[in-house]
Image 1 (cartoon, rainbow, N blue to C red):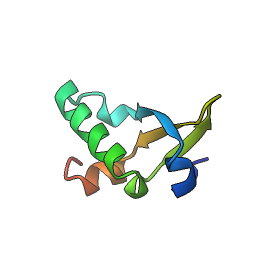
Image 2: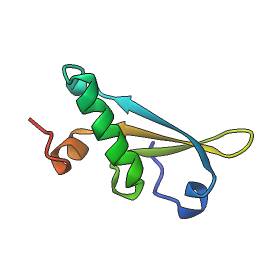
Image 3: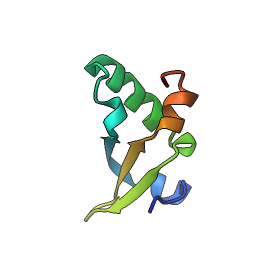
Length: 76
């Protein structure tokens, strides 16, 4: 279950991860990198965000959804 954007945890993010659904599998690596950068630059806008507790902070994992792709103009 996704978390809600949390400004407190955001200040403690030390690592980021991007998970991709099957519909993004055919995208080239440059496009996927651009999408991941955009989502992590504006995490409050991401549809599916999780904060994973680490020893020294949090890892922000964003799962790219169809809604994110549509919002970024990359949807089908």
